[in-house]
Length: 146
Image (cartoon, rainbow, N blue to C red; front, side, top):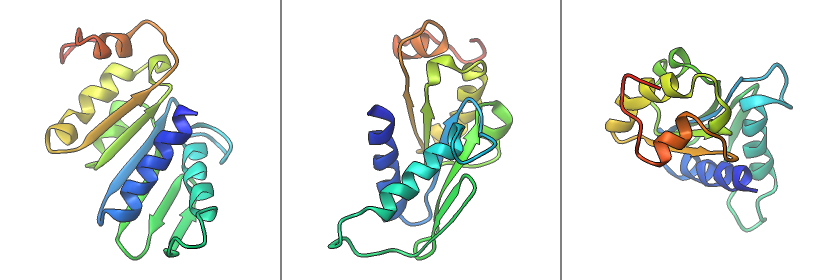
C-alpha cells in the first residue's frame, strides 16, 4: 500500500510540475517490467491509464523503466541502487522502495546529497530492518560511512 501511495504522489509531481525528473529506485532496475524499479514505473503508467474521465488527458511516452510527459518535459525513470546511478542525474525527487534492504543504501544516499541539497526530495520506504535506513531514520548516519 505504501509503495503504491508514494508512486501516485511522485506521479502527480511529474505530471503537474514542468521539467521534473523523478526516480523510482529499487535494489535492481529489473530485466522485465514486472520487477525492480521498472515495475514501479509500470505502476505509474497504470495510474495514468486509470485516472477518472474528468481528469484532462496528458500525452505521454512510455517505455521500459521510463514514462515521459510530452507536454511539460517531465520524466519518471526507473533506476537501480548504487552511487553511479544516483550521480548520473539531478533529480527533482527520488523514491527508494524497500530501502532498508539495499546492499548499497549508504553509498546511493551519499551520491544523492548534491541533488538533495540543491532542492531535491528523497523518500525512502521499507519494511523494518536494521542497517543504513534505520540509522538515517534515527539521525545516526554521517556522510562518509554506512
